Image (tube, rainbow over all chains, first blue to last red):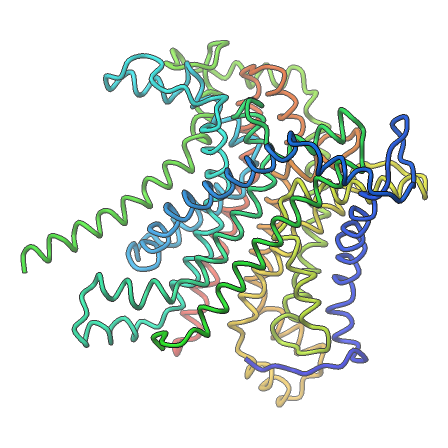
Length: 291
Length: 278
């Protein structure tokens, strides 16, 4: 890989960087700043009033209702991370080390499912999880009592939807870090007499850590914003933060409140991101790590 | 030794089994939708007694979903173009160049990937509403397109970046040595070599935009795209025309993926026959 050092005066660099940078600044960075600014305003008669005070923040911090929902959102996100990693790791490992013949086809199938409209997939889950749905019908036919499962409109239904929509992310990141592992390291461990299991835990697993961390963080931050799943599959019985945000915009027309709740979620996600990358960096520089 | 071999076989089976189960998991809701779109009954429960195309007929007898299809197609086409071009340029700058403030550029262009779509949509909605009240416009398809470009460009960038990373730059040097100028090198060498990545990025971008709900929902104003149409439909009640509509929605995506795969194989074949050394 040849790397060219470029100055900002170089028109080629400017052409490559400037348009994208402008789009991202104008429609991503500025909106973020705007959201932060809006949290210091208030509404009067359903209209935004530029008042510059902390009224919204005192409201947000003084109402336990918000914090119960925020806490629930974070707990759901953590559970989702655990389930996603537990599914994604063996699947990515199988894809990286076994299944040589059908690898491309499987990858295409996964990508296709991943890119299919989330509304459609969620709709499909309703038809499966419904009391008279496909899952119960199948269970009944293998001998379970009718209505064995009652998952639609429960937090479990929400969780199935969240895992479904997010599990592909850690699969990709873990797969990418697994295929980058130098095969010689694994063979060297075998030569040195290590068992398969020991090689896995002392060579493969530590080296796949970047993929594990980044996959886990992605699932966490993305599940903070889960909206369709709690609404459509959870039936609104256990609302998550997204529902709170939607209500403050649509029902209550209180933009500063919606902005403040959005900022709380963003800060939560950013904190988790910072924490895990700090942790990953510390692990990397920790002494005694097998080189 | 036998026990060892048995254990290895067991591990292999378990691992392959996970992938098979995962694929079943991924396709269960999609297959269910497709199956129910062909039912002749009005209620969406099993068993499906007989198959018919009745709901497709019903769907087309009242084509109020067509404007939504048109909107989705327009949004996806324009967003794909912008996201692919911006993503390709960004990928080259990410991987091949070193410049001041590159870390900031990378963070800025990668960050939308780390945002839940709903929050991305809300943040942009706030900005467009403020901007709209200053400049006197209201949200519509063009704000959806801007939202999609912001959301999708990082995906396109990552896909192209993988291609840029594996790029053999000695080919460019060779072309330059043979007397090609900068533009010729780009047109004859760089672009064709990056094309597979750019092409996959475009397909990725199109499908992400075509199926996008969250950002469209936040930014569409009164306009409707296909996912918004389906969402409001399933909220009203599950009529069997919605599985039919959903199945139709899968068709362009399927066609694109199949075309892409055919192209990829052909390119692979050409590469291996034209260049035996690699």
